Picture (cartoon, rainbow, N blue to C red):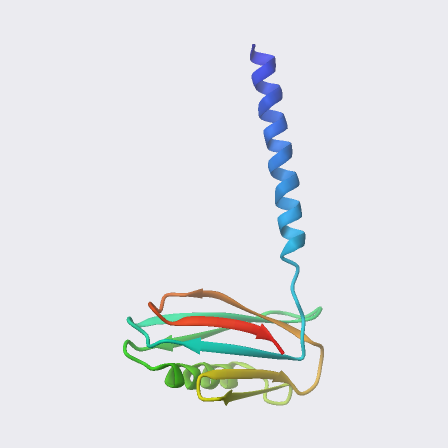
Length: 132
């Protein structure tokens, strides 16, 4: 009986490792020369939004954006734009607000890059990142 339990445990561990490796492959970074961050809804709390920008074969840059409670989507987009402009090299990236509530992040030179939302503690505001 002990051997059977050990065998089942070993099988379960192998299955978990195989699943983890498939999941890791599924989450391979997607690179583009331009990204759109869509902001929806007013913030219902103070908080922080953290993005990660990773150039292909480069070092990631984390960008942290502080958001105050009650900020509208257009103001949050401006906050994101300002934080990105401060954190990123202006010679390599162009950041602008588009349609009031969207932020465009474009490369000027260098490799394509991945952009992801790492975390947010801002309640009620929705963020969607799309490759352009």
